Length: 100
Image 1 (spheres, rainbow, N blue to C red):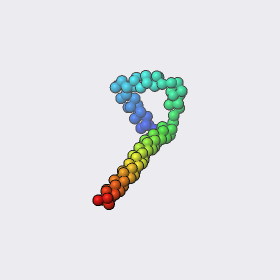
Image 2 (cartoon, helix red, strand yellow):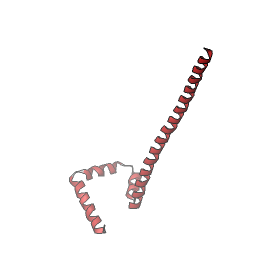
Image 3 (cartoon, one colour):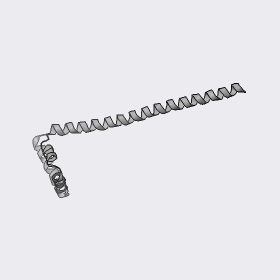
Image 4 (cartoon, helix red, strand yellow):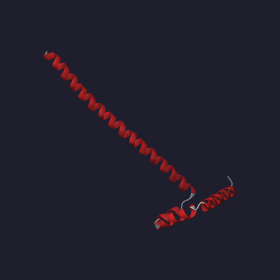
């Protein structure tokens, strides 16, 4: 997209937000933020926003992998405990048969 098309798209977005009353709502939320946060957000470049988006996506993926890993380990431990309990029961059944 050209710079002119970007400006037109931004102007349309601002007009739509203004007509829906969302622009004032966003301004109120922005004004309620701490000063340091407002300064941080105001100084972001498009590359920074893209990088933050990538970090958020990566963090969500890492959290998902963590949950999956937790359940895999939990399942393996459960299977091991069940196998030991089953082995003990099988041994007790064979011990009973030997006594009779």
